[in-house]
Image (cartoon, rainbow, N blue to C red; front, side):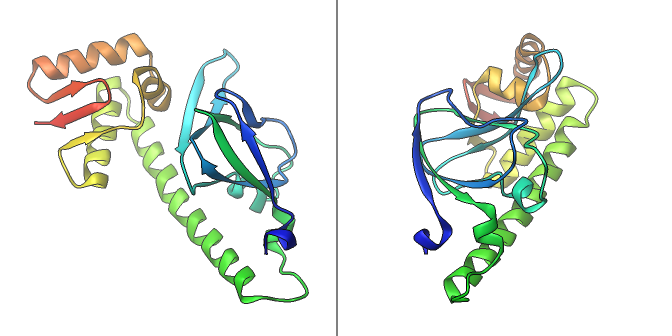
Length: 195
Protein backbone atom coordinates (compact mmCIF):
# COMPACT_ATOMS: atom_id res chain seq x y z
CA UNK A 1 0.00 0.00 0.00
CA UNK A 2 2.90 2.41 0.71
CA UNK A 3 4.07 1.95 -2.89
CA UNK A 4 0.53 2.65 -4.10
CA UNK A 5 0.47 5.86 -2.03
CA UNK A 6 3.91 7.01 -3.20
CA UNK A 7 5.06 7.44 0.41
CA UNK A 8 8.45 9.08 1.11
CA UNK A 9 10.29 8.92 4.44
CA UNK A 10 12.47 11.88 5.42
CA UNK A 11 14.49 12.85 8.49
CA UNK A 12 14.55 16.39 9.92
CA UNK A 13 16.81 18.07 12.47
CA UNK A 14 15.42 20.11 15.36
CA UNK A 15 13.91 23.43 14.14
CA UNK A 16 13.94 22.28 10.49
CA UNK A 17 10.88 23.23 8.47
CA UNK A 18 8.98 20.16 7.33
CA UNK A 19 6.20 22.03 5.49
CA UNK A 20 6.40 25.74 4.85
CA UNK A 21 3.68 28.39 4.93
CA UNK A 22 2.80 29.64 1.46
CA UNK A 23 3.75 26.43 -0.36
CA UNK A 24 1.18 24.30 -2.22
CA UNK A 25 -0.65 21.86 0.07
CA UNK A 26 0.04 18.52 -1.59
CA UNK A 27 1.21 16.27 1.25
CA UNK A 28 -0.19 14.65 4.34
CA UNK A 29 2.49 13.87 6.92
CA UNK A 30 2.81 11.21 9.60
CA UNK A 31 5.32 11.53 12.44
CA UNK A 32 7.16 8.20 12.64
CA UNK A 33 9.60 9.30 15.33
CA UNK A 34 10.15 12.53 17.28
CA UNK A 35 7.97 15.63 17.64
CA UNK A 36 6.86 18.52 15.45
CA UNK A 37 4.76 21.64 15.94
CA UNK A 38 2.28 23.39 13.69
CA UNK A 39 2.91 27.12 14.05
CA UNK A 40 1.79 30.40 12.58
CA UNK A 41 3.79 33.64 12.53
CA UNK A 42 1.84 36.90 12.38
CA UNK A 43 2.79 40.13 10.61
CA UNK A 44 4.75 41.31 13.68
CA UNK A 45 6.75 38.06 14.02
CA UNK A 46 4.75 36.66 16.95
CA UNK A 47 4.58 32.87 16.94
CA UNK A 48 1.41 30.97 17.79
CA UNK A 49 1.58 27.21 18.40
CA UNK A 50 -1.50 25.57 16.91
CA UNK A 51 -0.61 21.99 17.83
CA UNK A 52 2.19 19.66 18.89
CA UNK A 53 2.48 16.27 17.24
CA UNK A 54 4.33 13.10 18.23
CA UNK A 55 4.77 9.49 17.10
CA UNK A 56 1.91 8.32 14.91
CA UNK A 57 0.27 11.73 14.59
CA UNK A 58 -0.94 12.95 11.21
CA UNK A 59 -0.56 16.55 10.08
CA UNK A 60 -1.63 18.89 7.25
CA UNK A 61 -4.50 16.59 6.24
CA UNK A 62 -7.09 19.30 6.95
CA UNK A 63 -5.43 21.60 4.42
CA UNK A 64 -4.78 18.88 1.84
CA UNK A 65 -8.37 17.56 2.08
CA UNK A 66 -9.77 21.10 1.83
CA UNK A 67 -7.80 21.56 -1.38
CA UNK A 68 -6.21 24.70 0.06
CA UNK A 69 -4.21 26.56 -2.54
CA UNK A 70 -1.32 27.22 -0.17
CA UNK A 71 -0.44 26.08 3.34
CA UNK A 72 -1.40 28.74 5.93
CA UNK A 73 0.97 27.33 8.63
CA UNK A 74 4.49 26.02 9.16
CA UNK A 75 5.21 22.51 10.38
CA UNK A 76 8.54 22.58 12.25
CA UNK A 77 10.57 19.78 13.84
CA UNK A 78 10.39 20.34 17.61
CA UNK A 79 13.12 17.72 18.04
CA UNK A 80 14.89 15.47 15.51
CA UNK A 81 12.14 13.53 13.76
CA UNK A 82 11.36 11.09 10.98
CA UNK A 83 8.33 11.86 8.84
CA UNK A 84 6.41 9.98 6.17
CA UNK A 85 5.00 12.28 3.49
CA UNK A 86 2.18 11.03 1.26
CA UNK A 87 0.67 12.91 -1.65
CA UNK A 88 -2.91 13.67 -0.65
CA UNK A 89 -4.28 12.87 -4.11
CA UNK A 90 -3.10 9.26 -3.65
CA UNK A 91 -5.04 8.95 -0.38
CA UNK A 92 -8.28 10.72 -1.26
CA UNK A 93 -8.85 8.82 -4.49
CA UNK A 94 -8.87 5.03 -4.32
CA UNK A 95 -6.67 3.11 -6.69
CA UNK A 96 -7.97 0.84 -9.45
CA UNK A 97 -7.53 -2.15 -7.10
CA UNK A 98 -10.13 -0.62 -4.73
CA UNK A 99 -8.49 -2.46 -1.81
CA UNK A 100 -10.02 -2.64 1.67
CA UNK A 101 -6.83 -1.15 3.17
CA UNK A 102 -7.36 2.05 1.21
CA UNK A 103 -10.97 2.29 2.39
CA UNK A 104 -9.78 1.86 6.01
CA UNK A 105 -7.19 4.58 5.48
CA UNK A 106 -9.82 7.04 4.23
CA UNK A 107 -12.10 6.17 7.19
CA UNK A 108 -9.26 6.65 9.70
CA UNK A 109 -8.29 9.95 8.07
CA UNK A 110 -11.84 11.28 8.43
CA UNK A 111 -11.93 10.14 12.08
CA UNK A 112 -8.62 11.95 12.70
CA UNK A 113 -9.98 15.12 11.06
CA UNK A 114 -13.03 15.03 13.34
CA UNK A 115 -10.84 14.61 16.45
CA UNK A 116 -8.63 17.54 15.40
CA UNK A 117 -11.68 19.71 14.79
CA UNK A 118 -12.72 19.10 18.40
CA UNK A 119 -9.18 20.04 19.51
CA UNK A 120 -9.24 23.28 17.53
CA UNK A 121 -12.61 24.17 19.07
CA UNK A 122 -10.99 23.75 22.49
CA UNK A 123 -8.11 26.02 21.45
CA UNK A 124 -10.63 28.64 20.35
CA UNK A 125 -12.38 28.26 23.72
CA UNK A 126 -9.04 28.95 25.46
CA UNK A 127 -7.74 31.79 23.28
CA UNK A 128 -11.09 33.59 23.12
CA UNK A 129 -10.88 34.37 26.84
CA UNK A 130 -10.04 38.01 27.53
CA UNK A 131 -7.31 37.81 30.16
CA UNK A 132 -4.13 35.79 30.56
CA UNK A 133 -5.53 34.36 33.81
CA UNK A 134 -8.74 33.18 32.13
CA UNK A 135 -6.82 31.67 29.19
CA UNK A 136 -4.40 29.86 31.49
CA UNK A 137 -7.05 28.48 33.85
CA UNK A 138 -9.28 27.38 30.97
CA UNK A 139 -6.36 25.56 29.33
CA UNK A 140 -5.28 23.90 32.59
CA UNK A 141 -8.83 22.78 33.39
CA UNK A 142 -9.27 21.29 29.91
CA UNK A 143 -5.91 19.52 30.25
CA UNK A 144 -6.91 18.21 33.70
CA UNK A 145 -10.16 16.80 32.26
CA UNK A 146 -8.27 15.27 29.34
CA UNK A 147 -5.90 13.30 31.60
CA UNK A 148 -8.51 12.66 34.31
CA UNK A 149 -6.47 14.11 37.16
CA UNK A 150 -5.78 17.42 38.89
CA UNK A 151 -2.05 16.47 38.85
CA UNK A 152 -0.69 16.53 35.29
CA UNK A 153 2.03 17.58 32.87
CA UNK A 154 1.53 19.87 29.89
CA UNK A 155 3.40 19.38 26.59
CA UNK A 156 4.87 22.91 26.61
CA UNK A 157 7.68 24.86 28.26
CA UNK A 158 6.79 28.40 29.43
CA UNK A 159 7.55 30.13 26.12
CA UNK A 160 5.60 27.50 24.18
CA UNK A 161 2.68 27.80 26.61
CA UNK A 162 2.69 31.58 26.10
CA UNK A 163 2.75 31.05 22.32
CA UNK A 164 -0.11 28.52 22.56
CA UNK A 165 -2.21 30.84 24.73
CA UNK A 166 -1.22 33.83 22.56
CA UNK A 167 -0.01 35.88 25.53
CA UNK A 168 3.22 37.55 26.65
CA UNK A 169 5.60 35.17 28.47
CA UNK A 170 6.40 37.57 31.32
CA UNK A 171 2.68 38.22 31.90
CA UNK A 172 2.06 34.46 31.91
CA UNK A 173 4.83 33.84 34.44
CA UNK A 174 3.47 36.63 36.67
CA UNK A 175 -0.03 35.11 36.49
CA UNK A 176 1.26 31.64 37.40
CA UNK A 177 3.07 33.17 40.41
CA UNK A 178 -0.13 34.92 41.50
CA UNK A 179 -2.17 31.73 41.20
CA UNK A 180 0.44 29.85 43.27
CA UNK A 181 0.35 32.57 45.94
CA UNK A 182 -3.47 32.44 46.00
CA UNK A 183 -3.38 28.65 46.50
CA UNK A 184 -5.16 27.93 43.20
CA UNK A 185 -2.39 25.74 41.80
CA UNK A 186 1.10 24.33 42.29
CA UNK A 187 3.57 24.25 39.41
CA UNK A 188 7.12 23.27 38.58
CA UNK A 189 8.18 23.76 34.95
CA UNK A 190 5.55 21.84 32.92
CA UNK A 191 4.03 20.02 35.92
CA UNK A 192 0.81 21.47 37.38
CA UNK A 193 -1.50 20.55 40.24
CA UNK A 194 -4.90 22.25 40.46
CA UNK A 195 -5.85 22.70 44.12
